[in-house]
Length: 112
Image (tube, rainbow, N blue to C red; front, side, top):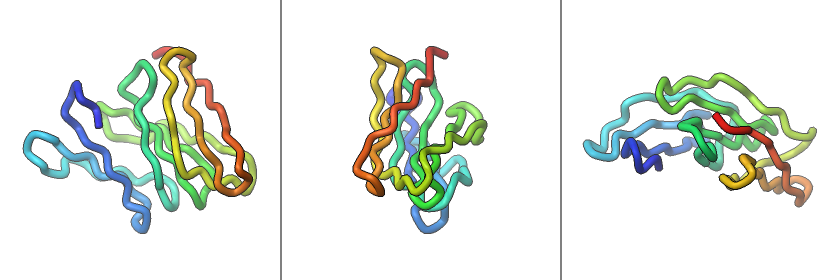
């Protein structure tokens, strides 16, 4: 959830999408097609970007919060199954927990 914009992001595992919901009216304002099997969502450390872990694709989709569009796809190591994401604002890093190899990938995103 983005508390500044009162926007909620919900992953749909089967559909491969993220629903963008206006938290004030509880209505879906956009549907974003991301990778296969999106499982976890986190906000960018210093931006309104949204990061989505796509388990089957071994990727993290990066979407612009303002436009609800995917603008980048980060490829994780082969056979990675990212299931959880965490944000570290102090280091401008997104961490992806990989269920496939029991490792964590650090994604440096930098200030925006």
